[in-house]
Image 1: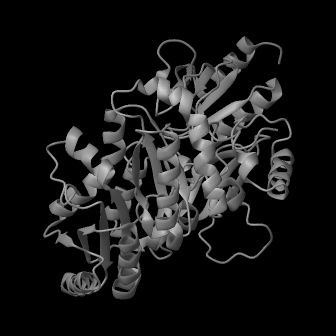
Image 2: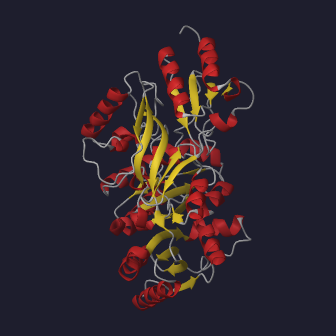
Image 3: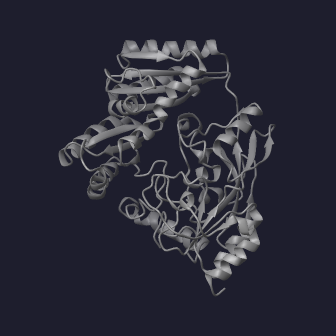
Length: 473
């Protein structure tokens, strides 16, 4: 194929002219969710089926045009928007949004990759089941994007990341061939487990077009508590007690520092934020029970009584209704929005062994404040699985864009160096994208990088699937 115009005409024949966008306002597809970068696309192509995805990929491969697979475009690391060259095709899967089948006997659901997470949750609930993946962006993110980034969320402590919820995939590979791996099998020992190559690969190896996901029975009760804790050590102690008293009923355990809670109180005054003025840290935790609400509440009461006696909780409130529970969770979920309202910020999505988080935060806070006086630390996240959103807001009354431009690189280097010493990860759940692609070689072993490059070369020899993301080859 000799020209871009010929490729675009062929793409129109494949998916329909209305679904190949080359003009007008394409911001929704070419700008990342955090508005860090705005790219330019040769075209935004919106296939309506797996067969159309395969045909689009074959056409782009023949023209040697690179592709950027995209779901809801809610990623945090600029991993699903095109670069500024104007030569890339954005492959948007949002038209592929159907629930294909729900197998109640097998406790599985099979969906298109463009199915919005909240729609998937609601379809499962209407059928009497729980799909436990829960994210702040669930109203717009898609299951394909969740799988592509191996999204985490607030219930990992019990159900695991998206990877643990997936039994099978349908994928269009970098040659435009369709791999049908949509099995609901929980045991299949017939060689390499290919689905795990594509989960977390951020569209760099192929295009996820469908998925078979696990279902769970709806819990008979869900109870939520909001607790004030005097220190990070106390929060870790409370987590241990929660495991002891709640067992598998412990569904969520989220940590929030005083400053991020103050941002919620400041920017969303309609929300009542308990304890933030008197406590340096707060925790929201959830107990799901398949026995009865009375049993769940009794377990919760025993946990909080033991925590009070141990001195790791200074005060607590337990939701008396689902509305109150949603309000408490909404406080936690509002932190990223409140931070955005406060202004530009530097984000670190890191993971550390839970037992070492207090030590890590104390050391890293001291190093940051010594080197960047006045920086405001926004520490919160999924303490139950060791994932902190260790973010930094510019000093008050300072030019935030200038602070971000001048301090992001040295601040990242400082935080990541400490993460390395604690044998943690510089990306717990957001992925690598393009924001961390240059940092990855400094924090991943040469052996690991060599194996990753071999996989990329083997599956995408022409480097046409989301190039410049995860790995530079």
